[in-house]
Image 1 (spheres, rainbow, N blue to C red):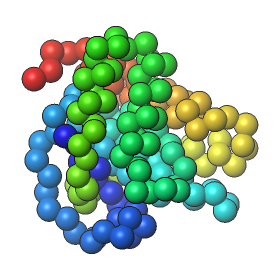
Image 2 (cartoon, rainbow, N blue to C red):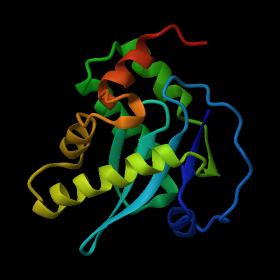
Image 3 (tube, helix red, strand yellow):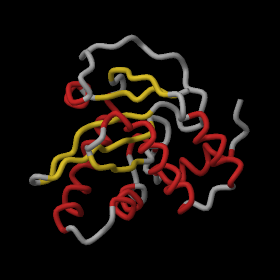
Length: 164
């Protein structure tokens, strides 16, 4: 089980209250995920970021009723690119099948997402790279909250540690 911790803008798009109860602890390695809207010209996207690793994905902002499934699918693609063992991938994605919505709680994650949004905006505006390729580039960005480590490397480390 994970929580999708959404900004107020995203909660409004999902037609959810601005303040939601605090979720229980996540049952996956990468923790809860944060979501925020990302607008580039007329295009609408959702930027989603893991709270523990800052691994990020971008999905189109349509069909929001299926956002949890689309998050899991986009994360699965990043795991394949990271060459994570299939059993570990399946365990993490399985934990993401039960999603509850919650309000944001970490300024550090939101700050990282703001930086990712700036980088993603440039790539999305160019229209050359796919959403998965843009996410891969974001995940190669050294981040201060991770002591200048790369989100993809932190995710790989968290996923391969023994998990309870």
